[in-house]
Structure formats: C-alpha cells, structure tokens
Length: 105
View 1: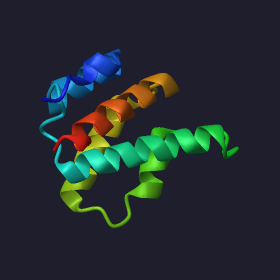
View 2 (view 1 turned 90 degrees about the horizontal axis):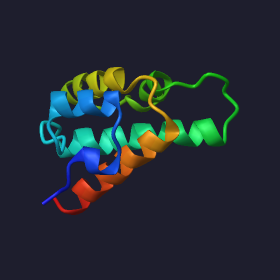
View 3 (view 1 turned 90 degrees about the vertical axis):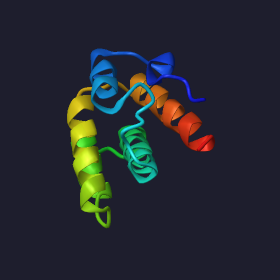
C-alpha cells in the first residue's frame, strides 16, 4: 500500500493536489504519474544545470507535453497549475512519493 503524498512533503499546493487527485493521487493514471514525475524532474534539472532565468513548471510542462494524450495533458495542466510556485524540496518530495507509488503498481 502506498503512503499518502503528504508523508513525503506537505505545503498548501500539495494539500490542494491531494484534494483534487486523492491522497495517493489515485485519480491519476499510471501515464499521468509518470508524466508528472518527468515534468518535475525536467524542471529541477533546468533549475540546477541550465541558466534559463525564470524557468517555471509551466515551461517544463510545455517542453515535455508533446506526444501525450489529451486526457494526460488535461490532468498534467491541472496538477501543474496547482503546483505553481512549489519549491525544489517539495518537488523532490513529490517525485519521491510518485516513485514509491509507481514502484508498487
């Protein structure tokens, strides 16, 4: 059984994400969770390595969404809208939560 997302990290944005998608993000499909993890990781990578100025989660989402299904894009856009302004530590916690969930599917 997966632990709640809030076990790994908790902010107002994470609370909203859990309210929208469930305590273990169960309303997201496997593809949605993978895509969210990729987007968060891509954003963190660019924040650390690439000097792109103000690179946001929305920028990362735009860069990563090509080829995703329309349903996946809708869920990702909603999740990223909720997560706007999240910090790097919180993103890492969410990635950790997603990884734990994906490992035991």
